[in-house]
Length: 259
Image (cartoon, rainbow, N blue to C red; front, side, top):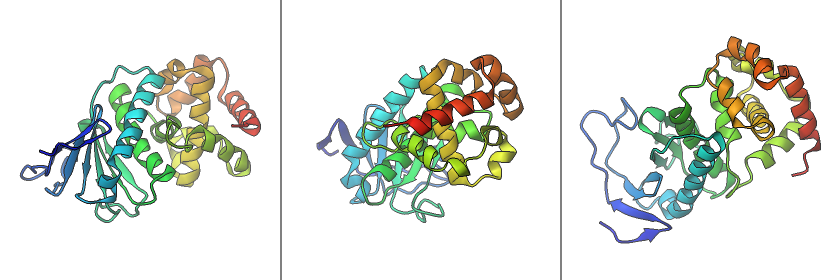
């Protein structure tokens, strides 16, 4: 056991002992032995020895510890679990199609992501988004729509260590006004699937971030589990305003957002 400390992290073991067959962190996928584990208060980091992630594990842990606390507080969750973050050296190694990718496994409080240079907003945003999937789903259950599942994970991004949350989303909304889909389209799972992924993620995240800031998280929790048909019908009764009125209010806010 190593005695080094990294801003509250301890190197718990030089290697992870792999169980035969499969590893419970990822279900049916095998996990090899070549990992080092850094234990934090709310997050255990699994990194490749000598990797970029290991060299920066202290800061990566700071970002995720902050994100965990922020998400739980914003949504008023009772969740008090412990996350397991697996940092891969490339998309190919993690069986992703690119280096800008990640995947969450809420059933085992785990997620994997690709950690490549540079150290900064894009990496912090990626791993925080995946961590939010775990925290939100384990805290509230499964969402009823893709709109809520993916949009909320980005809407909740803390900006303590980066500016990829509201300070990016609201100006992005203003500058892409002509390309924005209607919220009714994104709430419908069929419409979500027909919308360019980047546009769908950012539009839904911007709207949900504004909705939380303006109306609080308690109302959002009421619509979180609803499917597409239920959500469209219930928004007016829960928010006291129809969806198109909320959407218009959000767009005016983004137009005037000064940051």
